Length: 633
Image (cartoon, rainbow, N blue to C red; front, side):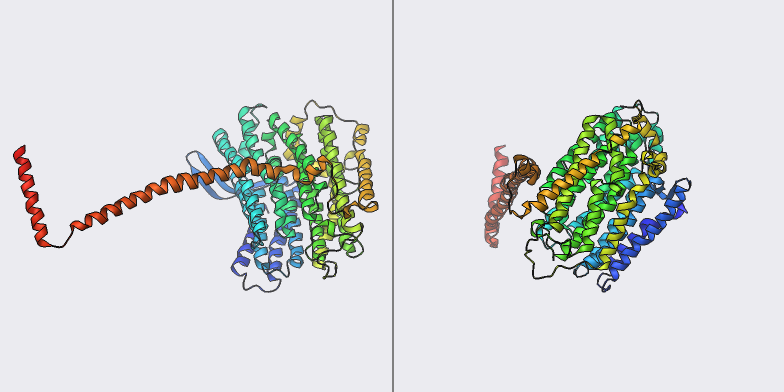
């Protein structure tokens, strides 16, 4: 069964090529149907693989061909089918398929319909390559491929220069992190002599914790994850990536790209567990990102950017889990987040669709009766991401908070604060858009309308997953068996046991007490209701803000800092080299050399008179001068 795993990435690659070479021939929604089918087939195959592994089948590496042989280095082009890759396959193909189907209705009137779906299939192909690769090099190819695909999709509406700038920003900022990843690959080859996961992880068992080389390798790998998964300081590209169509935002934030950093660290858990310094760094970066992005989301007014900063914050949660050794919790939250974040983005797209492209929440309001299906679906997504029981986010966040508590009360308290921020900005968004006093949209000539079934059905499926997806991780305290922990135990058990060595097991009373923040979440939701429904403060064009609120509204001026510290100095240096070094020095030297040659040529040409008598005269004079000089000698 596993030997045909190469078919999984092959289908979306074939879909990309088929649509790309026939994009002028495909009419109507043909391209959308073909692209969706090319993701559905791998999804069905992934379900079979997942079931086989759940029943006890042993994962295996499928070698396709010998790719690189140089000196002592040999790299196979091979795919790894184990429980971690199987879980990621379900997320990428399952959620990706629903987004493809949704896109058929959302992009139906767009002139670039066929081109859009070819890019979407290409995106899925590279993400599947990333999660299936059995070595770091194949993972890196997929890593770079999703970067390329995101560039194409973020700048999809390329006639808008702002969108092009957003695409370039995402591409360039990811390259910064990718440099760290590339350097880590060189160190892995030097230290282990291979890039194969199985060999590296096996050799790592003999390496003591705290080894300086492993610390360097893991820190460089994490640098790559910072860029791809939009953590501080390389997070500003992700909100700007909202320039692309809304289904692209859903695909990037839920099923592909930004999850790559989490997956890579989880896949390399054996290496990371050997470096306490790196693990602590991951936790610190994660919690700072979660708090900072959550603060920014509270004060934003663009519906998609609020969700974008929400993604940055939730990714911070996942890195907190990774840094505390709760690898299962990180992957569990990645899974549930894929469900409710895809739902929220698609529901936001439904709102934008209903309001003819409007994204400013200050120009929305009172939509719960006008687009009731979208409202209920958005409500489910908001409750899930806020961590209310029995929705999926409650169980996955509880697993992360449990890991944070093991690492100390400070990290746990800050994690709870980030969770409370999530509830506030999500229900602020919900109340303002659907509940509060309706503002008059600028595009009021178009009546508000519910989205077609091609959009609402995929959202409904995601809503069901957002409600019941957490049942795979119900803790023993609540009568569950933590199925996902059992499923991923062969991959994470050894690393989690090394990190948790010496920690005291928590009593049932303590675990129950750690669930108490859910009451604080309910209080925060009520606060959001009072502010944005009863007092209706959102009606103010520019409400007064505190000093911190003003900082958060302006995104802590991170982009401005980058512009002052990086962009302007580099632009100034570039101008200096162009105007002074190139134009005034190099170009002037080259041009003056040419001018000298021309001047000499112009003056010497007068010697060539064409008069034979003159030539004879000069020849005789020259001969006499030569003889005279010889006589003088």
